[in-house]
Image (cartoon, rainbow, N blue to C red; front, top):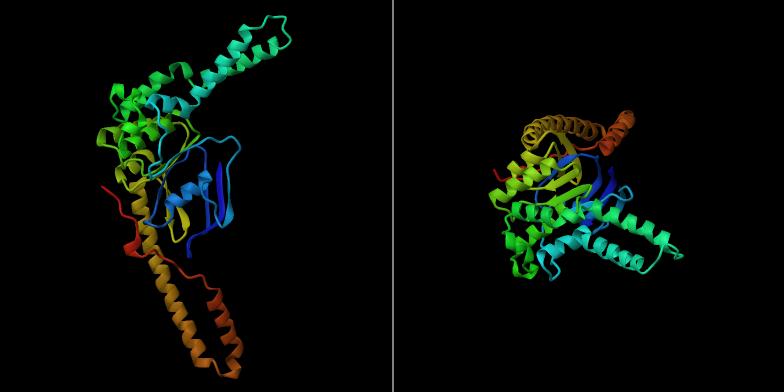
Length: 314
């Protein structure tokens, strides 16, 4: 569904992504994890189009609806919470267009030149509003707001009257109510209490679309994820299973990499010893040259330093 291929991206002079590839398939529920500074937020922003990579490509199907909750606070427009949610979901625009069309129709007769065209448009706009659950939207919004910890009267309060953490909850409510095809979440539990977090986990469990979430909360990742994408050394490594399964598999993978690294270092040492020993011996020139080329082409085993590996809340 979303294809990321050959992505290279710098943060200043530091290479953040190195030929990074990742395919996010329809229905995936993936936790994106990695050390601080690895580029998790940058990768999500690249997927949304907010940032552009230096090279490589991100292919997204036309019409795919992506909802994104950023880690940093986005200022909300100055209006009532329910009005903001209706606008975010497209309900306000749909209602306005339908009302304008109905007003035009009221001034026409069946014999009017544009009557049937306007009637067809009215039917289209009505179905669009129904597709947004426009007639039940306020009730749905109330349930989402309640789940995220808001009081019943908070829907009529102005967005500017809330603190930063509660504004993030308003933004999250707006995202959920737009019913996107793909949800990208960057540390969604940072501003949630236990009850709100449990409600969000339940909502996401029933969500039929695709999820990619960045979080340092192990419990949250275990609850919602069926796969883990580890961003390390500029690349993505995929693991099946939830976060706990990932931890076990990653340890096995690191131990295997350490063994490979040890064998590789021993091989390099043997080659270098041979080259140093016979560098100036004409009868060994071809063998020396062959070994030098082998060293030049050798792809070194890379292992993330222990101190840079990601830590999680338990």
